[in-house]
Length: 482
Figure 1 (tube, rainbow, N blue to C red):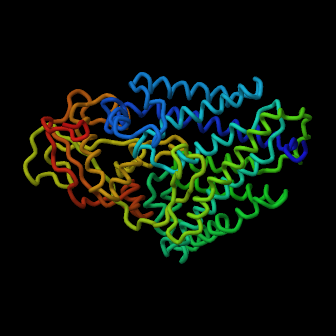
Figure 2: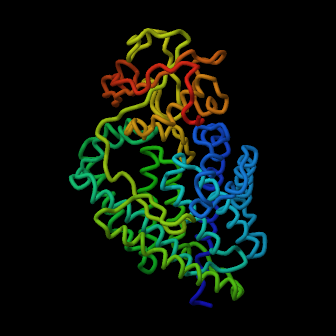
Figure 3: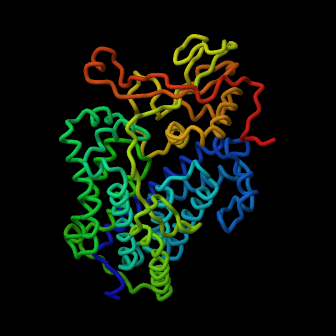
């Protein structure tokens, strides 16, 4: 079975599978801790309403057959427990078929969550986790040697992630071709990290070098993944270094970490370990791997066509099972950062009072990850995903398209909804809900080094306009329906 297996890659498979299971743990944990306010029966975008309008075929999910908040929590926490067990090696302690079922259960449980997650789950790394998780089902366990075909499918996935991201940049914003996008990106990215201020203040020559290196890593290096070792391993190692640089410069949930996980499967572990002896894989396993390979090849048609198209789309799933997808991000770069700021007051506000200030008793809600308090250094949250904070960044880019769910968020703040408040860092009304809540748009920029020394502030902000006027407790919640 030399044509079918690569026993010398057992260590690469082991590390890759364990690391992928850890990403699954974080994904299920994020769902378990955040779903009630976002997707629960009384959430901003309730799952029951979604499944009543969307058929199973369009969004396959366990929740199409039954939904309750308790059931959703059970699915999420079961996913955490199962993923933790796999990360600890449980899938290698059982027969091959049982290990495959464990990986298949992880994929099916997370697919059920993603397919009812609506805008809270509309991110490329959700599809990336599902596609990688699907392929992991067929990687085998300690009872069989790694199948070569699946290792190649993982490289094909890594190629599409990197090359797609490179193409969307090169075809998109001209600043990528001019090597100037990082003059802005570290300041305007969705969720800056604790080092992003320092990255932003690097010399402009360093920013241009960053962009040039990015183009090489994403547009040229991926082709080396299909060369023999050690070239493929060297390409994967270079991608890992690039992804670690991105980890240091911002918070992108598990996108960078999952890309690293995929690259681990392409590393050549033979110089540091001896090949293990394996029995020939069972014929049913061989047949399954060959069938999955054919399936992925067939389903790759649309992602490849998308890669070659001048109207390339990014982060799109072409089937409801998220089996073979297209990836890429930041085809355009925002030059100016806007932030949605939410405030409450315990008194009746006067018309026009308190714009951009604290008069009128307005007190600001603090969020865990998104910028707010100008004196607060952004925290490191990735690979954990703060879904509400991320959507507030999109709301600042396109406020008109976000007013519906923003109004739903405001209505829950007016009642001090416990599930919603658990998503926040700071509630300025801990004992009694506010009488009114308003939503404003601010312009943010990083302070200069001099401003930072003089004021202790990381950000400078200026009030731009009102997004939602003061809303009182008697206002109807548009997300709850008539």
